[in-house]
Image 1 (cartoon, protein in one colour):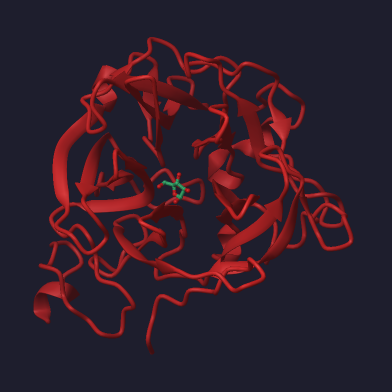
Image 2 (image 1 turned 60 degrees about the vertical axis):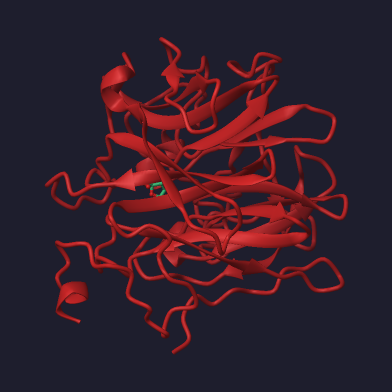
Length: 339
Ligand code: FUB
């Protein structure tokens, strides 16, 4: 209808059958949904998209977000509750601009919110904030996590209690500026026939506030055991890492960015290496594709976003659909559109 066509106003959820799923939230724009089950309930930690009137730029400057809201639901068909502002950029002493895709974790009675934001020198760092409640408000630590850089933190806690942070994003996410180990304000990409820039992983300290070891590369390999190449845009890592475990295997999934897939690779250790397996979510409306995967009551769910409500790449809306596996452990590819 007319409302849905007006890109500047939020429509009430249009039950549009061309879409596999409808937006979960319709009164604000939300993206990059990191979902978790805490105490049997689903909590979602998305980006909160706004129209900040920043002109569209190649490096993503128009994704100029300034706070986070946390959402909860008893199950994916249940009512979604907006718990309001959980963290505001004004309360992060070192933050400059662009509060991007967050994640959350729980340990020993405390909830941790991990978030990427550019510092005052315009360098992306990853921060952490804590709360006694899964919905916040979260209190940020005074400094970014030491030796953190780039974007899109995803924290996976293994069955033995060890927690790992995966992170990184090329292009607007600045990973290509760290090839030397230190930040250089210059984009350096490997040649197309060389190994691609790989996402990063580091084990977290017992207090969940620091890296307890040096940052390592996450190797994503082809079926021959060779690293995916920089020119392999259909398959190589771009941004949005996520890790989950299924039947004893570790699944590393991520966005291929300029080719817009959510791809996945499978390994035997949280550090990898991971062998490329396929695409779990085909491109969605809008440039970005960013997801998370959870299990609740024996069913698996894929949280993702598209731009159904706005038609604009930087004003997204989160969605959820069931995720299904084949008997051999591969994932059935999700197509978000019925047309
Ligand atoms: O939402 C801002 C950025 O866009 C995220 O950090 C990326 O993963 C992409 O979705």
